[in-house]
Image (cartoon, rainbow over all chains, first blue to last red; front, side):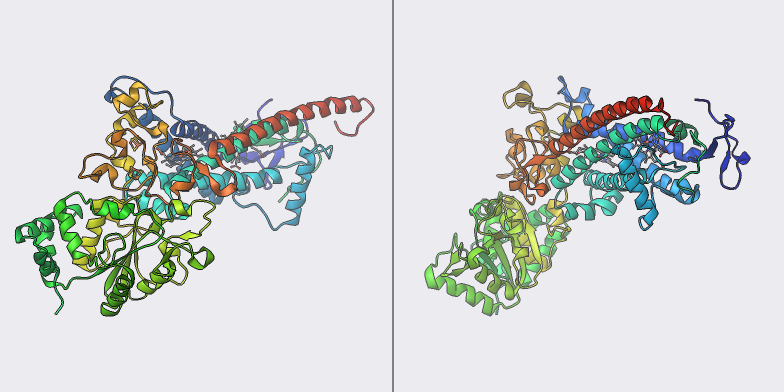
Length: 251
Length: 364
Ligand code: HEM
Ligand code: HEM
Ligand code: SF4
Ligand code: SF4
């Protein structure tokens, strides 16, 4: 697929401009560079956290020899914690960008839950995924179902992992550390004990794994079947459309 | 009028030299600087002795057993003489109505001034009939004694959390001290463990009696000085954990070498207690040192979380017994199969649609 040229000042007030492909369809600059960078970094970090997290709970086969010659578990845990910090800093940054960036950057943080139209859209997406309508709607931003799952599963899920993760981390750094003061001190009593906290941190990992599986499948599927571009959009930021009809989510 | 601690100790035949030694020991075990030893001595010489009333509910007596085996014989003698063990079901001399009268006497005489130590817990089921003391439900004795006490010590995991007698489905409704409805609102110090370490118990009592205030408690109500670190934080097998050297079977070479017991279900990483630093039986050993993983005996709910020999424990919130990997792995598999099926259906639909297109479908 040819990439639209990235000259954002060629864009008119509504952010819509003619596609450089000259097919008459429009292209919209949707995901700004920070959002795209965050998306790929975040995806990497989540994969790293899932792999190392799983290995923390079910460690690799034991190594022989002297303990002083190895640091396997130490490195796995270090990677997990380093990635944990990246996840947290990334999400903080992404939340800031919801404020500083364009309107699409706000979507996953503020689903318009009170709008009837939004819920209509969700209903329509469900019908679309259950093969009950023939034609998908056309969206500049995320589709309403995507917004719902990104908000409730990803944003809240990641926040949950960060809060529980730092609470677990604070157990190691101990009382007097900021991780303990900010997180462990209230999260541990909330979950009852450390073992429960581990179990919930572990369980929500699987929720995020499910999200990622569906997310990647749907992204590829929509790229093929929907009326707008998907994969190229998260790479270049530009949304292109496959037909000339009006979009369904003009804000 | 009232005897001081020191008077009592002297009466019990403890020399001044031993007394001073005990004060330094106590300061040390409380993590205080040596400068505190004279302060403790002074307090004990001048303050009237505070009686401790020690009640027993549903329990196995392991806390008492631990307590009287307090590592340092000196500490034991001193503490035992400090405690008013006029009433302690397990070791008191009196019996029957005479014994029960002692409770009334202490409650009357030292109103608002005695420490109530509770070992075991009160079953609330059938109006408390599952534990009867002197003809009455234990829960009533507990409430009565709590009414005029100064503070309550919940000994062990029974009084602190409920322990095995509160295990699902808890037929007698065994209930830890702080959850007894209608119990007087008194400060409660939890000293969990099954049993708690003897030196921890004596140190908590010594602290209360000498400083006349509660030790600093954490959010769960445990004295911070003994429950602020996990077994895992100070475990001598920790280097093997970091290296990735685990016991995989009870009879393997790693087990003989004393490698980390994580894969055998050791709960050291989630258990707050002082075993790995203070150890047991005068510092001789502790479970991990003897080759068995920690079972998390000082943690709330440790009895209801599935196997002691599994790293991942059961999550009970779903009404089924399953750990995070069974629940989550199943969900992920279902999602994976669902995706495959959906992709298949999609492909099928598309080929149907491209068939329709020939007959002039409006969509491209
Ligand atoms: C661990 C992995 C991943 C996570 C947690 C994740 C999460 C997200 C989130 C939160 C968004 C919303 C972006 C925003 O509005 O800020 C998003 C968008 C997107 N992601 Fe991912 N992602 C992951 C991996 C991937 C992969 C591997 C692909 C490519 C196959 C992908 C393709 C996309 C696309 C195309 C969008 C834009 C969707 C749209 O335009 O509606 N993601 N992702
Ligand atoms: C998507 C994000 C994350 C995933 C999927 C994840 C996954 C996991 C898993 C599966 C475990 C093992 C739990 C068990 O004992 O059963 C774990 C442990 C842990 N995680 Fe995470 N985690 C995430 C985020 C974080 C974050 C942000 C932090 C914060 C620094 C963190 C810190 C920890 C700590 C401290 C442990 C305990 C390590 C130990 O017991 O040795 N995690 N994680
Ligand atoms: S034996 Fe238990 S407490 Fe010790 S290092 Fe291993 S997991 Fe931690
Ligand atoms: S090692 Fe663990 S199970 Fe054993 S006594 Fe200590 S806290 Fe209890």
